[in-house]
Length: 224
Ligand SMILES: [Zn+2]
Image (cartoon, rainbow, N blue to C red; front, side, top):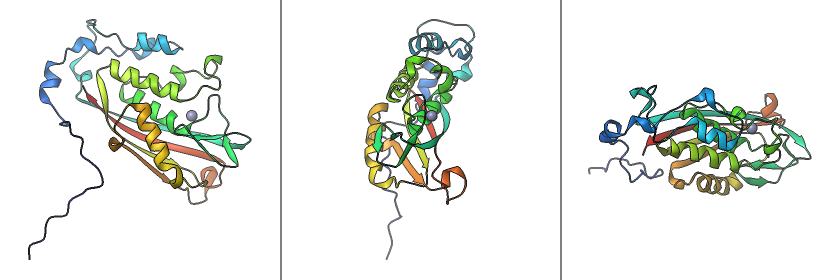
């Protein structure tokens, strides 16, 4: 008897076509002007100086109006007693948390860096400098929202995101759906395009000894 070919059903395919060739040709190049060297140390300044929408800078080359842009983010924080452990905006019960200038959200920080990287912008530390009291204790959702704003101003939207948390303890699985739902909401994205994985570090090094927590994120941005 003939067998049906196996089909993947776990990952819903985005309803929107992945590639629209006409977009890359018809999109006005003047909408994208990436000027990393002019980013200033504040959200509003970064937003206005990193991109100039609607003007016609002569420095933009066709290669910058890519239909897709990929970005990678990495972050690591030391775990210390007496701090909350915030992952993806969710407060996770644990005997240690992240000692950091902001809320030390390792996942949101690396997601921000992945988006900024895809846009060809400087890292989170340059956009939100930790010597600026403005960001002391700031929830990292502020940084995510700013990165998403920059993404839209550059003419892109999230294609999909894949993140991996690395920590020995506590177990992430009971909190995974809450983290994923909150991250999707912060990104303004369909949860179907946001993926979260978690793994231990086999009890070796600081990650495996519950002295630190790390995360990697890869994002694919698509031309709107
Ligand atoms: Zn961080």
